[in-house]
Image (tube, helix red, strand yellow):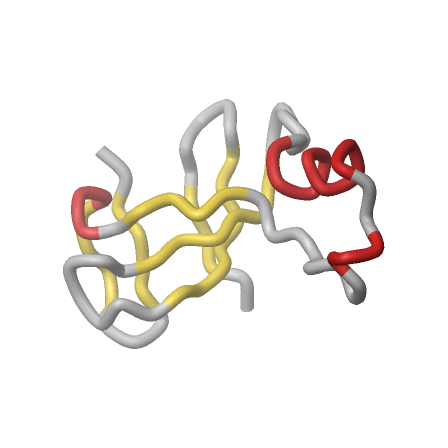
Length: 81
């Protein structure tokens, strides 16, 4: 089980959190995107090996979103600074 440090509540078990995925920028003009471009924004994500920046929400705690770094090989977790 992962131990994740919430910036507001401190270190907690993984079961208190929900994974939010890769941080991606929201399009400036979403209505101008084609269906294909919109699908890429919503569904296509990188699948790296090693350190990776991720979004998480402390669902069973303060309910705040934050980003952290997680090693996808070892599940080691560190804060984003």
